[in-house]
Length: 225
Image 1 (cartoon, helix red, strand yellow):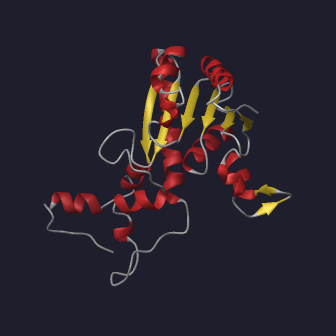
Image 2: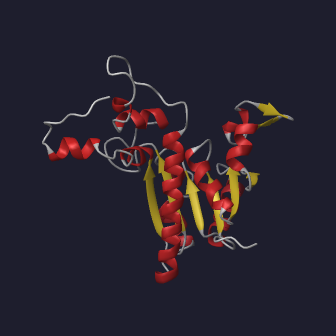
């Protein structure tokens, strides 16, 4: 049985949830995903409970269907292995803090020179540029910045936090869609692309009425929970 991404290869530098969701979806669509884990412990979600037969159920859920290898890019031999893989793949996905992949020696300038047709996707809390880009952040932090918690919970109480990875999973799905669209563009143009996907933008995308109510009325309507 063939899948829509059969034959496509993905170099995966993601961990935990947003990035891992993206590459899991690519794997489920048929892509060959090579997950690069950093020493000494690899993806730290390997330590998330619950455990069965000594393995994290969380890690298995988010990384099923992928191949995994541990390589240290801080060592010259490890970095050379990773750089040698770049021309052999179609997609590179990473969700380190902005700037980290570049300091590793695998930023967009480097990988696009080695493979002009590659699609590189960087996933972060607040994007690769802009006033918030240097801040570390996770799902709930981006959720608050996007005004989502402002709309959830009792109006006389504190905001409620959904006990689901809504922002991370949504961002992973946004990333998957952007990557597939970039691959389609590459088929037509022969050119790769760099994709900058943030949890903040993905959460902001979930506002169906709040932003336009406030904007269209110049603040006369101020939506609240």
